[in-house]
Length: 154
Image (cartoon, rainbow, N blue to C red; front, side, top):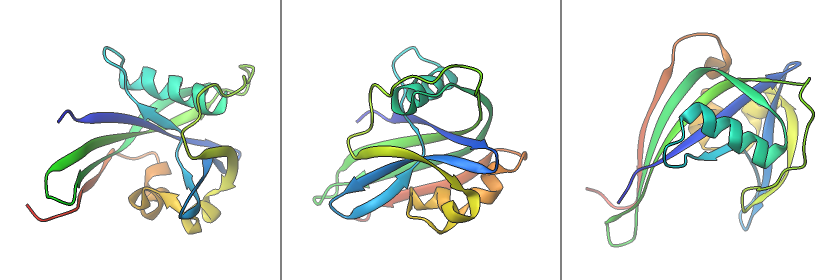
């Protein structure tokens, strides 16, 4: 199985964080804008494109804030998903005219500017992002958030 790279954006503007608002059968939750990297696409290009597609806003990646890896096993114990999350701290470009979102995530119902304090208390996926949010927003070094395996033991 191929590893899927996902470029995610932490977009902080006027003390608020832009989050995608999502609803699934489990209820409402938030997610960082961003998504899958295309073949031949740089991660910084992927995060710009994905933010534009999902929110209609333009951003400039400033630094890689975090790396997180998730491996999910199916019920039989074989790997059915391996994803690498590359989380970029991005600067919102308010001088670039916003567009209509053209390709939202399947569960995305909108987007919301949320205070950092509220984001830390919100249902933000993946949870490791929420649990480390203050450190990710700080202008420090890239943080390795670890690896997670879901499913049966190896």
